[in-house]
Structures are given as structure tokens and as C-alpha cells.
Image 1 (cartoon, rainbow, N blue to C red):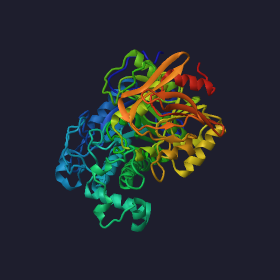
Image 2: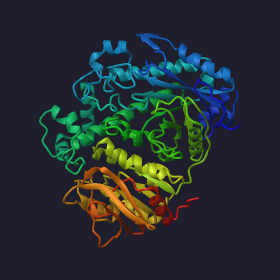
Image 3: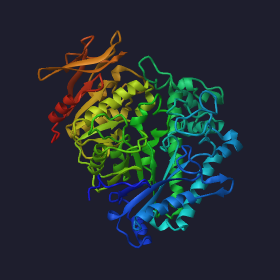
Image 4: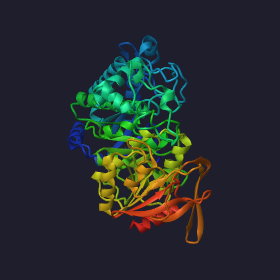
Length: 592
């Protein structure tokens, strides 16, 4: 049967499971519970439900009042799914949020945003207040509500045909802090600030060590907390100074670590209730779409992805596709799917979370299915059919994202969209497989031939030694964009040389970020005329110059060797697909 043309019911997700076999004990138990069904040929329906309240109003609240719950909506949806296929499996796609009545009773437990307000309007919420994750009272409520729901569900008529649970929190159910996509800085609830101070104690040990790291004295507890304005500050170079802005860097790091820890705690709770016999997952780590939101990545809590991937209790992640793809074949996950698979997590591509689409065209559906099947994961949507297959990508090209570098960069959304979105779109337009992977995971994968590093702004001393050595061993070609390795113990253009082989310089005057390249008799220009900046240039002598700034004529695109690594540097992002194809061909990539 043509999976793409099969008519889809409106009751929920409908897909075939084959690539989620990493936990054989769980799958065997689930099969036995349902009479021995075969996973690789069983239909699975997903449906939305809540353990307390859905702020988007898609499903009825189940936590009516203190001690009173109503799960009939969830049971009715499962019944509808199984009436279509009595041999199917069902997965509750849960969401959690504090009900309005709880907020009214617990006003000291609510999020306080950076502007001091507790009430704000959110694009995808019926509420103006939200429980703070810093509230131990609310965290206990979340855990208890999830435990209660799973216990009731497992004991009910559908527990035996439920292989997994998915739990979402925050904006888009993606564990993104409420308000971060609207530009509100979370969270200044006193309880969360206490948690931040505890976190600082674990990180630095003593006040003296903290003062040394932050480069200033700390007289009182309030000195430890960066204001929202402080969190928006950058040095003239456009980067956070590793010392002067360390308080802001640490706060965003804490926010991500704290969010990831709660996500992991919820996973452990499901494992405990089900005696480790069911799978658990959620949406998390949507970097690419958040790059289009002012301060979205740093302020969202999603930078804890590395910690989440190491958690044994989390079995799968769901990630949306980037919602800006204009090329018909440019299907691209918004989080590093290759890293998910490397860490043994099944991965599902969601196709309509961010866009709010209710229907996908046949072309979009085919592109999504083909993309998913070619990489060993499936589609998670309430509107389409998909098949999950076993196996991993055989890509020779990698788009490498460094999550830690986001802590050192605070830029306008137009710049992030330009550096990440447009560059990824150009790579996707080649029509060849490529992996989206975290930089920290490169040391555990098979060699790639061509790697693009769009945002490696921060590089530790270990990275400066280890990463070039790895790429030299692979005899790979690395394309570095804009600011490779600028941030270390300071922020300086000189820091790039040990990582890339290029000695970079700051121009005396800002110039338009446009470059021109001559290629096969054609003059190619790329970049943006809307942005003027002190983006770097390099010396002409030691390097092969391939392109220059349109306005200043300074070298902007060049090539050199560092060990056995071919190193290409582009000071201007948005390197066009035709040049990327050339670089890939010269790197030995099979272009099909």
C-alpha cells in the first residue's frame, strides 16, 4: 500500500513502528501484554490528552479541582482509535500546565518575568499566568499528576496496548519556557532564583571561586542574579564576554540544566510506575526554529539536550521540521536527529507543530516520508501516515551545531536566521543526505567527508586540540562560518587560528556582509545587504583566496590546510548550494 496516499482519519497519528527496537525488554513485554502482536506491522495511533490542563485548549482539562480528575476524554479518544483498527497500539500524547484555578490559589508559585510581571499574553495560550518550574510545589504536582494518569491508564482497558507515553510542557509542548518565543525573560520567581544560587554553589564551590570566574566581587545574594537587560548585553564584537558576561552565561546554562532535569525526572517517574516496561519521550531541543526568535535559544531551556540524550529513561524524541523551508525537497529536522540516534533514542519528525497546518500537500507528505525513511525514523503528526524503518543514515556530510556556543552569543533573530536557517537551506537544496548533529558527538561517529560548522563561536582548549586532530584523521573538509572559536577565556579574532588554521582580523570599519566569488566564469554573490558588521577578513599571503567582500574587497572566503584537514573559512554565511556542491565533490562526497 502507498503509505503517502492512504486516507488519514482525523483521530490522530497513524504510523507503523519498526525503528524503535532499542529496548527489546520493553517491546517484548508490550507484545506479550497484547497477545503477541508484531511491532513492525502494527498500526499506532497517537492522541492528545493532558495530565492536568492544556493551555491551548485542544483537549478538555482533566484536573477539575483539588482531588477531582476526569480522564473520560482520553479514554474516548483511545476507543475511537481502536474502533478503526482493533489490533493497533495507542500512545497518549500528554501535555501539562497549571490550571487557572491552581494559579489563583498559589500566586507565590507563578513565573515572574524579567520585567517583574506575572501576567502576560501568549500567542498559543488561553492563560496569562504560568506555574514556575522553580516552585517545588508545582514540580511535585506535575510528578503526582503524571503518576496518577499512568497508573489509571495502565489499569484501564488500554494499558496493554500502550507501548509509550509522551509528555510535553511549555510553548508548543516542547519543554520551551512559556514566554521565551514572545521575548519575555523567564524566570525571576524567588524559588527559581534560590535554585540558581544552589546551582552556582555546585558549579563553583565557594564565593571566592565564583568571584574569580565572574571577575567581580559579590556582596549579597541579589548580586548573583543577572537582570533581563544584563542577559541581553553583548560586547562590541556581538559576543558575550566569557568573564564580564559570565553571570548571564551561567543563568542560561542553569535554566537549560534545570529544565532538562525536570524532564528527566518525569521520565524516571513513568519508568517507576510501569516497572520500566514502557517507553517515554517528548519534544525537546528545537534549535533551528528557535533561532528565528529573538533570544529564543538561550532563554528557552532547550540547551540541556546533551544531558537529555544521556538519560537512559528517555527512549525517543520528537522534533519538528524547520518551518522556513522554501525548497520543495528541503525537509530538515529542527533538532540534531543524528545525535538522538547516536545516543540510542528513536526520533520522530513532526511536520505541523510550528506552522499550525492542518493539512499537508501530497508533495510535502512525500518529502517528509522519504526524508524520514532514509534516516531510520518516522513522522509524528496528527494528519499523515508514515512508516518507521530500521537503520541509520549513510550520510557523508554533516551540519554540525555547537550547543554550548549559544551561551556566548546574543544576537538578533535576523542574524541567527541568516547564519543557521539560510545556510541549512542551501545545504538541503543539494538533495543529498546529510546529518544534523551536535559537535560534542563527532568523536563517536563514523567519519564524514564534508562538515559545516555554522556556529562554533566558543571553543575550549580541549576542543582546539581535539577537533582539528579528529578532522585531520578523517582527511575531511571543514567549512567554518563567521566566528569559529572566537570565544575562549576572552573574545578575540586571534582565537580562530588554532581551530581553523586561519589568522583572522577585524576590519577598521564595518562593511556590508556580502561576498563575491568567481566560479566557472560566473560571478556569484551571497550574503545580505541589510547587515553591516565588523565581520573578519584574513591575510592574503598564506591562504588561497576564493572570494572577497563586495564593498571592501577584503578576503572573505578562503582555503588552507591544517594537518590533513582541508579548512575553508567563509566570513559571510549563506554560502550558495552551487559552491557547497563543489566543496562536497572535492571532498569526495557521492553526489548521486
